[in-house]
Image: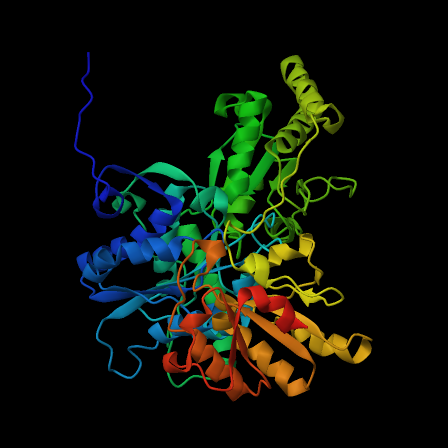
Length: 591
């Protein structure tokens, strides 16, 4: 009888353990990443430091909290965490880390960085992401861009898929499918970033970053190597000064993308999971969809042995853009059909079709549509493992006859019939937390209307309080600038959260003042970014400073409404021309 070895387990193992296994969440894995990179650099003889900045948002809403809680550990590893005022300014700071050695005044051999932001933050940062990526990364630096994608808008105002924003900025994308791969792809990403001179995107969805897992913490098992089939230009691919836009474009299109693909090929990032013997069907998938596909095979009762029996190959993509072609071409040999399983818009599928186009004996490729052009895997929403399973089973049965699989498919189709599923009898809409001042602050007088924005007050759109419409973060009220000249209404109220105000909202107020429209902003001040964990602002802000700023911007009148009006007096810094009201008098004030 074998005896299981026991060892003491500490909470900090997820950050400090360097051999064996540790239990952690995806967010904690992202905290661990820079600690590991610093140690790897020291072992290689490089004295580097780390820098992390970004802006919180689902599914990365708690990342900043975990970083702040581990400040001592980060400091010990020379990793600085600086929350960003907003996403694009944070990305600009990351760009700055790669410039640290250009003037010969850098303290370290290089600075490796992490930028983080949810999907809308990726979108608003497109300008700096493009500039910084084309400028390049330093030799011992490198930048990971964490894209927090909310595919089904569970906590967002749009359904996000950030790969195409990264593609447009020509930033390579790695798509992990597990907590283990968050660590692995993070280390791989920094090495790739240094090698190619590119920023590297790391896709983060709640299925991975909010998951927990026991992972192998020994990154030495990765055995990464540099390609031997890529020829660098004489001046290399890293950041430099002086530089020109034309030279940056040439490096990107003629060298950097090829360098990225060579790195992917040398380290076999994309790989065949099931070779499938004499296979006729190949399935290509990536990230979360890989997990859904494996679950689909489980539902069908098909393991690797079964896949070989049915003539099925399985290929897992790590880097969906730019897709590495040689691995795909090798995988496609002998196949009659390739099924691409990926969420949202097709990214891998068109690249595969491009690679195979010139082959005389190429397989059919289906994914978003089937062989006849009919919809197959939906672009909107999320993919369902049952639908994936049924699609795979139907294609297998066109090549092989198997009564057991046919029966499983029939049972699955019955389970998927929505008419047979129980209907929801009760739907509960989200509401303000008990005691939240926004609950009364967002009420407007009869006959008036308000507009919503990003934050908790977004919810008032489905409450009985005459609030319509919203904008993206930081543009609250700017839509009224365009609407007012063409509306019979003379005035509106605009809600704006204090977190949004600090992030970028002052620009919208400036635009409203500049246009001369009639609008009353309600700056909902509660000293917390409540929807992402209740964090404080990433910098100093008080009621007094907001008053001063609003008058400086040209506001005609500023009033304060509070449950505790006695706190806001001239002796506390409130200007003499500012009136302070009790919250119970809000309705009178608004009229």
